[in-house]
Image 1 (cartoon, rainbow over the protein chains, first blue to last red):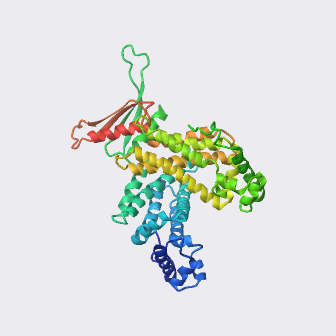
Image 2: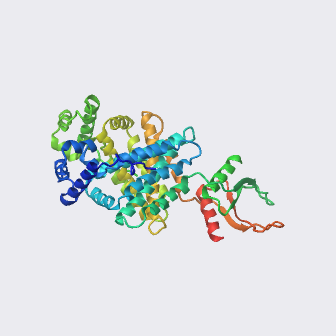
Image 3: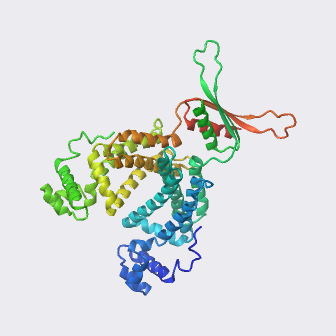
Length: 248
Length: 248
C-alpha cells in the first residue's frame, strides 16, 4: 500500500543523514539542548538543507508521518465504492501507520522514549494522531453520508480504531519492539471490527412472535426468537435481532 | 456532580474579570495580537494576579478545564465499586464536561470560533481532550483489571465516549449554542452505551441445540436458538448468544 519504500526520491540520503544526526544528538544531549545548528553541523550540511526537509525541529523527530498521512489518504480515497467494508478499510488504513513504525523498530523505540520525556513532542504527537483520526473519520463520514447518525458513527469508529491501534503500538514499543507488532494490532483492530464491522454473509434468522397466552395470562408477552448457525458473526445476530424488532 | 458552582472560592471576581478582559481583546484584536499586559491593563490588575490564576495566555481561554478535570477524577474515583456500570460511569463523567460548556453558551461559542482560528489553541485543546480521555481510560482500566483485553477495551471505550461527546458538543457549538446540548450528548453517548455497556436486567435465553437430522441428512447442523423479550438490550442478547456458544 505504501509506495515510498521503493521510490528513489522518498528518502534521499541527506534527509536520512539529518534524521540520524538529530537522533544521535537528542539521545546524547537531550532534545531541548540540541539546536538545528548542532544537527546540520553533525550532518555536514547547511541550515537551508535542514529546512528544505523539515519545517521545524519537531518534524525531524517524526520524519515519516507526512508521507504516511498522504499514503493513507490515497488508500482511503481508493475505497469509496460499495464493495469495500468501510470499517475494514479504516482498520487497513491504520495498519499503514503500524507498518511505518515496525519498519524500523530501533528508531521507533528510541523515539517513543524521547517523546515520553519531552512535553513539546507529546503535543506534536497528539496533533499527528488527531490528523490520522480526522482522515479516518472523513472517509467514514463520506461512506455513511445520508445514514442515520452517520457522522456520529464515523467519529466514534475512527476514534475506536485509533485507540485500538495505539494500544497495540504502545504495548509493542514498551516491550522495546520485541514480538510481532502486526499480530498485536490485528488483535486490537479485530476487537473494533467485531463491534462495528459489516456482518459477513452468515445465516441468522430472527422473528418476532406473540407468545400464546397461558390460562389466565392477561397480557401475553411479545418475544423475539432467533436461530443462528454457530459460525454466524455476532453482528449478524444483532442486526437480525434489531430488524426483527423493527418489523414487529 | 460538580461542586464548584456553589463554592464561593471557585470563581473569584478577579479571575472572572481577567477572563472577560482577555476575551474582549481576543475578539477585538485577535488572539495573537493580545498580550498578557493588555489583558491585565484592561482588567485593572497586575501581571502577578494574572499568573496567580493562569499559567499562560492559553489557559485563560480554557479557564474551567482544570476544575472540570479535578471534578471528573473525583467523580470517577467514587465509582470504583461493583454496583456502578463502568461504561455508564464514564458517560456520566463526560456529561460533566458538557455541562461546563452548556453553563455559558455565549462564552463557549465565542471560544469555539476563536479556537478554530488559532492553531496554538487547537493544540492546547487537543492536550486537554487527551487528559480527559486518559482520565476515563485509567478508570476503565482499573475497573477491567484482570479481564481479558482489559486495557484494550478501556482505551477503546474511553476514545469512543470522548468522540461521541465531542461530536455532540461540536454540533451544538456550530449551531451557536441553540437547542439542548444535553439531549444531543445523551443521544450520542447512548450510541456508545448500547455498543459497550453492561446489559440491564432483562431476560434473554439462548441455548445451543442440535437440529434433528432430516431423512438422509448426513451432518445435522448445530444452531443456537435465542428467545428474548422485546425490551432486552442488544448486549444482553449478544452476551447470551456467546455464552450459549461457549456452553455448546
